[in-house]
Image (cartoon, rainbow over all chains, first blue to last red; front, top):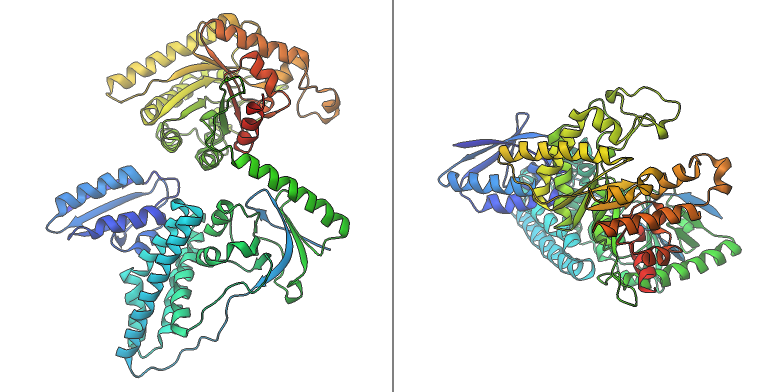
Length: 85
Length: 537
């Protein structure tokens, strides 16, 4: 399993548009991708769960990736977060 | 005549009859279903149909309002494919519940979850959940056709509108939207803006049947809905509407055009902003850059100075959104009249002439360095420039440049990438204007702050209403100082802009252009009007 942390810098937090893009991206990998905020977990392949985290600007999230393509998936998610959130 | 106030989403005027829009209501009751498999199948089919409808809405929105706003329907599509949401509904159906009720139950739950969030944007998303849930319920229940039944275009009065209701309405039949709920952040507000419909949200009005068919006016300038206007009010607003329409039409044609005079002189028209949230309006109004980014907002209304990281993120966000266009950041410009207790500023008799702006920065260099580091770090993400306020001497600029060089060396030693950053000063004291020949040798640009320059030159407090009648903003002394500053700047190859209120005063545009001004920076609202004035010279 791969795990890393990221601090949200987007003014609106994980809002609809990037959440939608992240779901698309996550759906392309076999691995389970979970975003954790304050102990609350959300499946990165489910948009409502992602938005339901209410991860606003300044929030630190932990990303856990587990599965056969976890290396690539973690890299892709990290790049995505840096570019979009 | 009834007057109601709301929040305007677009400054414009609409005149027409009211159409009281109510959502199709039907009693949704929980019923016992024996054929669970059949009900699940019925639900799946309804979801497929809803997805198909969303795809159509997306295409419609793409054509009428563009990709950015159409995106919401793609997001709705994803919400509708959300396994958590679908599974929750199916679980309820499996307990022998009818699909309509199951969707409503789960939709309400999710919507409440969003409504309870502490973030305004997320709260507004609860409407999106209800929108997709209602779509599925309507398909299941065979309810359809919410279309407006009217031969003439109307002012639509509703409790609230979902994005799909807004976009699927026949645009030729809507003059304005007026909703009781909704925020300026809602997609309905955004869509209304991109459709150029003067609309009000959060309006203090009741959804009365008797209003249906009555004459009304939506005045986006006064943020009012006037029902049953008196004849003279109706006449006046109708005339103002016509003026507004021809004005907007002629201005919108100028989007994408140059700010160029008939004899070919080009002027940069930039915008004044207070933060990243204003950038959208800059881009909508086709501003060529940011001529004044007031960094004060980062410092106000808080208990401690903003960290380098916080500032970096704000500057970076603006630079990225401006996508390579110039962004001129003005360093901290506050004094004893502003609330920032952590700076430890003592009360002063006369804060306008006191310990403020660059005077604080040069005396408390830690604050200054933090801001400069943040700006230089962000400079790698676009075209940043910095200007320093309240300058009165060459000495000050040399001190500033010394600190700037130290900050740059520091960042370079940390291998932090930086862009080329132009350095300039505000000319807002008579002293600076008078010695602008000397100052020009030290900087790459001047930006004339006419508000302070006027108050200091005329010795008139801008806030003092008694002096309003003698406060001549076109006073020859001010115009002479501006002219002198432009000439002195150009002698040393420094470009010169104006960023105060005078920049948007179109009665002076020709004067400034003739003086040789290179840039005018105004509120986004004035960009196109100014462009028009320049093109007529």
